[in-house]
Image (cartoon, rainbow, N blue to C red; front, side, top):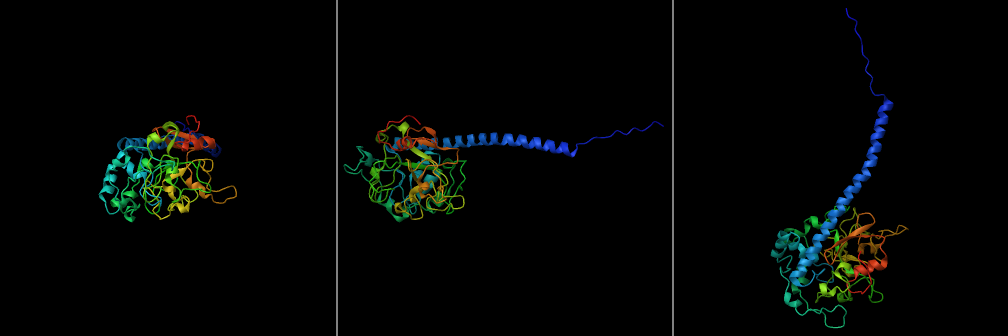
Length: 353
């Protein structure tokens, strides 16, 4: 009989297996940061594209009405804001139509009266007559305040154009409103009356130096024209990113400062609450720098962080300028340059961001 030969099989030893696992773990550790960087770059690009669409919407609206959309139609921070006015210009005509058709809960006319704009010469310095009120009395009624009933719940819709994919907050507030990661530039505080930390009903909106303003009182609304941007449209913020702050966190997404595209704060908090209109606007100067910490070094809350532009991108945030361009502004920008970009008519010497 032929002899039988047994061939031994040699498998992996435990040590070899552990070495292979360790090598794979090291490779994953090296690749993950690169993958995260690629993902963040894609998210930041999407965010910039969102801002670009919104900025184009602002300028297209200006082509139609000779003014930018008003930031909010009243000073009580409860009214519909600039977001709904952009709906027809960002491929959300169905939502706009649903709102316009609901005369009980919305009452914003589909076409603003252009006659109010004839002649120009808007007065923002308080030295002459304020511009005519181009709103309608119904704007200031209870029924025209932000609510979830209007347009069969239109304000609860999550619109991708208003959402940065890098953001950590819920896409909806706890009360159902669709989030916006973008707020209007209300300006800086240069030239504000002594003792005024925030605008309120006694501080005329015509004194605000940004590009997206709130109604200065119950009877007049103050829109901004491109001709009012004396510092140059390529050197003036229009919109900027917003994210978590002192009162808006992952755990608390229902506070009045939660940014929503529908406009003003629906919780009934006005400017007397200092930062309640943070659902629509942000300030930009030395006291409100990009990504201001929500807590100070001692762990105490910083309420002013509710009024700062901020993002989840590394060391900075995206901004749309009034000419329709979009720039990534570093958190290391000087306070002077930052404040200059916030004002439309400060006369500052500034370079392109």
